[in-house]
Length: 346
Image 1 (cartoon, one colour):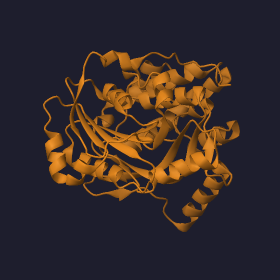
Image 2 (cartoon, helix red, strand yellow; image 1 turned 180 degrees about the horizontal axis):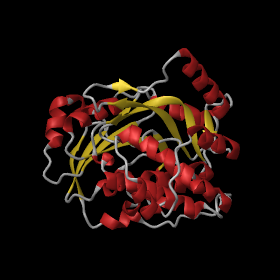
Image 3 (cartoon, helix red, strand yellow; image 1 turned 90 degrees about the vertical axis):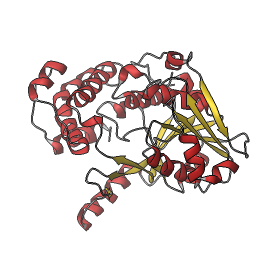
Image 4 (cartoon, one colour; image 1 turned 45 degrees about the vertical axis):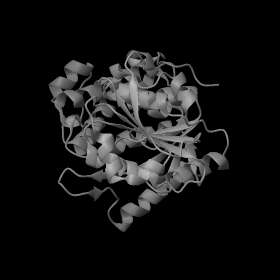
């Protein structure tokens, strides 16, 4: 049985249910899919083309569908996309345009609603799936029945300097340590369990790109909640882990891009820190022992470094004290990860 949830569930799909999405194109191979790859988009055509190509290129035998949900009511992106990728006319593909801009998380939820597959994965329009993504994910579901949802590991493509720089460990020593860490983390298995407690100190799996889950379970947890911005995907996975058997797949099967974006703004960085602290406070005494909150200042210090390295933004110490009500302490990386390892949440 899942542990009691500190996170209320509401129907976030209802927020924009009064706003329709118009089907502007449907390919010629419409059939009931096992998996929906849903791509929310808004005015990023060149990136969208690459995301769609990665979805179309899946080496996967069971039927899947690719859908795009465009959040720009004035968009003509479908025509341009069909001109660029004419094979879409014969694919199991649909393109929707929302009658109004329903916001980022509203559009993510609309993607879930419009998918016809039993299983669902959300692919941001600036991210990519490896060719083997679907095959390996469903092989893991088959090898160890009982998973309700799985998420793969992914690489980071840093494009802030105008060039794509994949993330990787440098040097043979670091590579060996990484292999040993993964072996300890997965214990030789293809996937490991992610209980809700593993989301207390942050999201070990990043955002929700690479997540495959049953559509009915995503509907049951209410989708993504806009009020939890900018950490809505973190909360989403914490809810999923609380109510369903959620796991992480050992393979790297997707890529996420980091470019200049709004996440570098101080108010967004402050939002990440505040929302994550609020999640810890909700979990304490329900999912994990309440005394784990004593590690909050150290956790915030580590998160500030991670966010600064990822997005290039930060907030002042005074802003942390005022917004979070916590003392500011220096980042102590080894101590932080040592505590996480001791508590079993790595």
